[in-house]
Length: 163
Image 1 (spheres, rainbow, N blue to C red):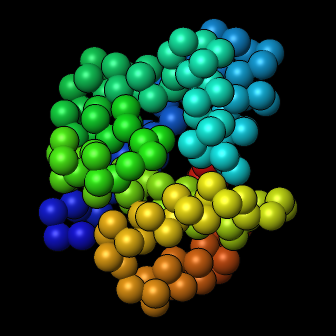
Image 2 (cartoon, rainbow, N blue to C red):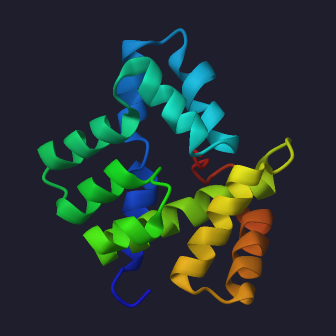
């Protein structure tokens, strides 16, 4: 990605669910189990369930946190839209945000595919397909990312991916 630096990509992927921490504090008994975990395999419909139940979502709270911490407009918008179902619509709004969202969605799908003990859902497959197409990634990039996850993803010194 020519216009997205490594640090910026890492930062947005690391902070993508910062709003979920606040949601878990609000509803410690149900949020993670019923809503956040559902989004691992159902990144779009699981997110909609969260929004419908709480009338807000971790994405909104994450965007507010990013703005309050003065982390920049691109990061705040990327956190807000990372469960968006149309990268083309996001691209019309802001192409760099769309690239960041596509990177988040591709990374989440790959982590789920490599580490989940469940089958890969249609939603995860479609999200990954859309992100790859949007970013115009070659197949060897995806295979390299999977190989890296398989090789280093279980290292105890590495932070586990959120989703």
